[in-house]
Amino acid sequence: MQRKTRNTMLTRILCMMLIVAMALFTVGCKKDEKETPQSGQETKVTAPAKDNQGDAAGEGAEGGEATEDGEDVGQAGETEDGVTELGEGKATFNFSVVDKDGNETKFVIHTDAETVGAALLEHGLIEGEEGQYGLYVKKVNGILADYDVDQTYWGFYVNGEYGMSGVDSTNIEEGANYSFKVSK
Image 1: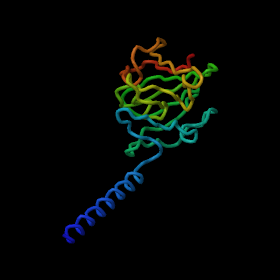
Image 2 (image 1 turned 120 degrees about the vertical axis):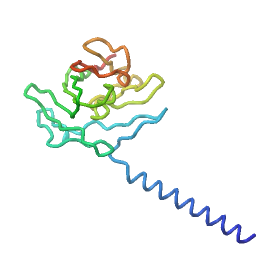
Image 3 (image 1 turned 180 degrees about the vertical axis):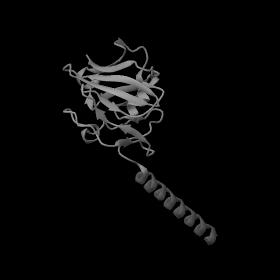
Image 4 (image 1 turned 135 degrees about the horizontal axis):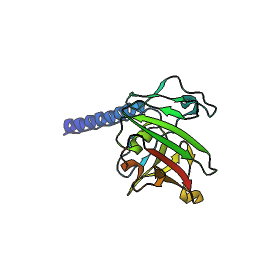
């Protein structure tokens, strides 16, 4: 009987050590603040840092940004007309952000993602929460618009028209213009 109790205790100790080791491994593998959303979980994506993307005056980054799995998502650079180009990939689309004061920031996105939402998440341009209707975007390019806080929200537009589907379910159309505008 004592031997069985001892074996049970050893098994429990080993299981606890395994759980601790797995937790430490998981924490050690986590990069930045990017997390893969699971059903019902909040999606957390850090907006691009100004040092990596270039400042408003137009200094582009020298290197690309790496995704969570270490994949390079391309270089950031600003063109002469003030448009920031991000990424590398087969598909290209225009993206703009209009804040509550009407200031517009323009991007050209290059990606291999299938949806606009996936491409913008890939480059850290949007952040939000997963809801029953898909991704509810609360931050775009680091700017918060939260209806619960100040009755503002991000409106999603496709070629100047209010989007008929969410950003995470809108397939990329080559050369299309997508935008988020603060709405009230």
